[in-house]
Image (cartoon, rainbow, N blue to C red; front, side, top):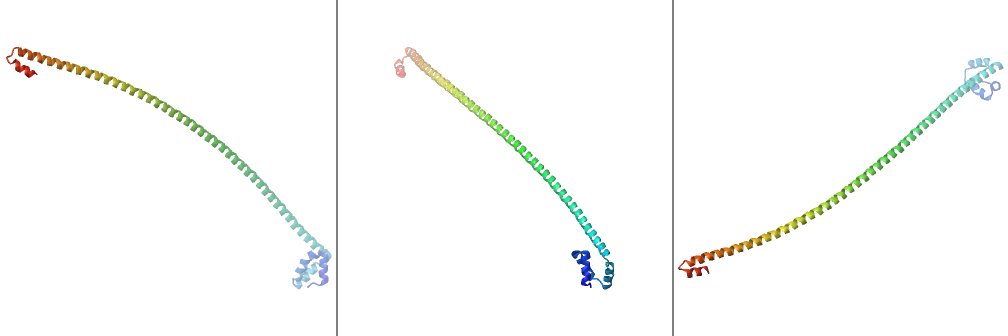
Length: 206
């Protein structure tokens, strides 16, 4: 075990904080190892050398830590740069998509407007065709009415002519009947003039 004086000597040589792990290490070692260590650090020059080695080790650790910090900063900076680039690319992509969406909306609007215009034109043509059909139907109805009226007029004329012809035929029949009766009467008269039964023939004719 180290004495109080020995511990104070080590603390004075290394400093309180730096001496603490050394004291703990020395107190936990074997007496022969302790004697050997004490012999090695017996002089102040050896203590200063150990302090320098400790300082170099700490400096190396600090240097490595600074290097690691620099590398970490570079890595973070690279990540930030990549993130900024990715954000820029994402923004450009979003802007492109929005632009394409606007263009597609415009094209769709134009297509819808064209379809509506075509529909309006077709409706106009259909209305004109229907109006033309109505006009043609009215004309056909008028022509049909005129034709029917002409047929009726012709039929009435034919009926009048037929009536006239029938009346004429009836007159002819009556005349023929009278002529036949006259001929029969003359024949009977001629026969009677030459027949002894004149009185019986006269009664027969009556």
